[in-house]
Image (cartoon, rainbow, N blue to C red; front, side, top):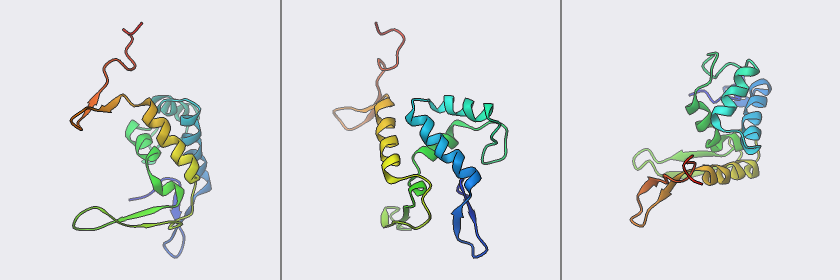
Length: 136
């Protein structure tokens, strides 16, 4: 699958596509500045930046996937084909667009903003009070 922000060189290796890499950096920066995923979509539309699929409007999933994709730091994770568990993590597998520090801060921010919590039984559930307009 094509990775937004990169292109293949003549040898088939992934290299940074500076034009789209600027967009990737902008998405991470806007998120850290407090923009929501929908706010980022609005900024991209206002700037006239087409989605990775070439559509006028970005979808929410594309932004959310980008914000959790470690490949933008240059780290490539290879999975065991049978167990689907991490078998090998390769640093500098591809040129990084963002730093590991920026990526880590975005993950921390995502966790702070999330309304999904783990209950006493280890199950995920939504905190119905967080982000509720009914809280005073």
